[in-house]
Image (cartoon, rainbow, N blue to C red):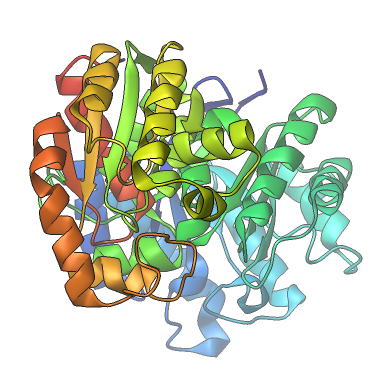
Length: 450
């Protein structure tokens, strides 16, 4: 367990906090966001000072000072993180380092008065800049804790490099070491996981490790795996999230991977203390994202995930497409039934099922005996868009068209409906939103306990 005591809060890897950011460009926007924050009631608030639109560049520090006072007035019961994110690391404004230091110097003088607990300093990106060490020493002398941070919106470094970045910040005075990077493929997300494991074992100080975008969004809620003491959630508001989220919220989740606060609150809690009381079997037509969602569920729920198709591939030493070349569909389904019986003997796991797994009722009966069956559903047009560029779908080879997909979906609709304990629509193509909806329903059914 890593822990950092600040003035009024404690960052603890066993009980991570959830932060939301004030990003208003002016006082009116700050006020509007503060009203939302009070309804959401997060653990801590970050003020992104770089988002403030400066009216008079000659008096920019005065404007920063006045805005900080206003943020405190609106949110005086919340501890604050002060952040000025530079344009080079994804922020809204570019300033030279002398001006950067000037902002932080002012904040350090007024920190206690305005409830500032931590300051975020881009320690790795500014390494070697004259005056950085002096700035760090000044913040510590004023009783502030430092989040040393590094952001890369273009790529994710390799595992060893990520660890080196975190260690460099710790060696240079960071009290919390933070890295946030954009993944280009699944391997980049695993690099974040693996490097955070290294950091948890070898560094003295707490960390925050984030993989951005929809691909990496699970790292924002699976904090047990990243060993993070803090995560950042968005201000997107909805009381239950059981209906359709606003389009702009989905777009935000799919671009930066920012998770709405209420969703993050539930998933972080489940990741920390949730327990399975049975298997969760994920079914649905090809292209609904069963494998993707199953893996994300397993990460959030801290449990094993097994894919029935992969199980068959490992067992027979052939890809599914190769199996269909030497087997009739009935022979393949026989092998699949045996595999499901074998897999279901293990309890409290996520089972990602092949698209035709529950065509046979005996398969769904076996799966129901061990827990709940979750169906992922989407419109035919969504399915066609997702699978049309792939050649690894044996049942579609030679028939890659929307009408054939509709026909197959209609043929399986009754069996899917009869087999499923719950059905979740996946047209949004967002794994975190899908996992949230699944988890909320399975908590109601007692399959997941908190």
